[in-house]
View: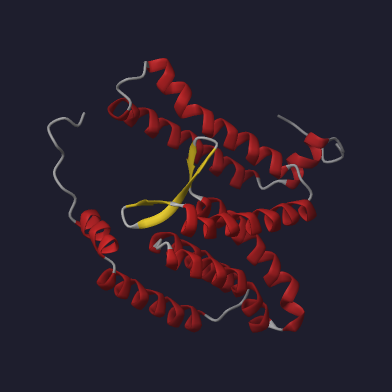
Length: 231
């Protein structure tokens, strides 16, 4: 497909404004996820027909692709506004899991909304990453470290809530993303290493203090042999 740089249509502006490599990577991940989900679906949904399994596995990836393309069409200021609203809503819903969430394997991370089980912290991750990046840029006039402190405020709120659930895995992902952004924003590598060592120490502490964390790590490192009914 050839689109001229002088094309001012919605498609033209989108084609020359979007990061096409990133979009291609996202589409590839969605396709790979669908293939793997379909490959394992028969073992988990034996009571459904093959057609029903395919439809069920493709509904949410299809919605995700539409959402990805739709958001990529928005101007940057609207993306920021959407991220801010989404971050506030996701933080609120994640906090709500502490009161109304369903406890599964020692953690309260899920809400039942419209008949569906939803993990709000999964929505919090992308919104929080966009908000932190925007805060780092906006606070640069106050200095590099001041910008990082400002951006760390919403991350701190998120980590406090995740600690109460508890959801150590999600907390580690959010911390890793924040440190990656901090490095790109100019934080010296030595400080990154020091902070990483601190996170590792917290991980060791979580392994020692929380039984479900220890069980998951031990199961990952030493998975049990497959049972006779697994196909």
